Figure: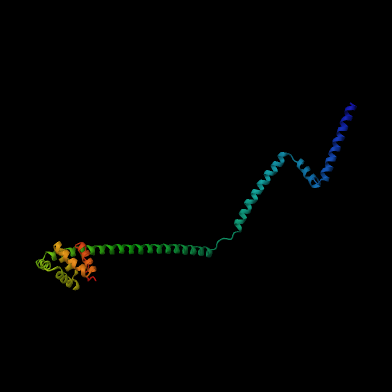
Length: 230
């Protein structure tokens, strides 16, 4: 029994020496000082349940402090005065008026654009109607002119003349700004007579001859203004 006690005593002394050596090394290396000893003592002074309860209480207190700070911040905000509220309303009303005025301007621009487009369409319709009426009038005039008895007599006279004489007579009509009348005679002539007279025009004035041929081509399609060519 004494022998067993001696062994336990030696082991206790060895552990104590090892602990003292460890503490000495921790202190010499800067890993242990009085503050850390106090922290270790406090850590082991409370149970795990007590530490958890303190942590929960600390969290609840922090949350309560945050709510209290928020309420104090609201209380610290100065209220809006009646004058400030009125000024804010005036500013908002001015913004609304500016937006309304911008919308009115855009509507006015659109209305002007539509009005101009409508006027242009109406002008085009009127011009088309005038052209159609002029065409009908010219067509009736040609039919009446070429169907009259006097026209036929004059036409027979032109065809009876020699080509150069007939050409001179038609030139007199053209110089008198009666180009349509001259073209009407040429159009009503027989092909042979008309070709000979046009040939005489080509000899003296190719440009005028070309103009007469073009007028013959569009004869009855539209009214050609009476003017002298060349």
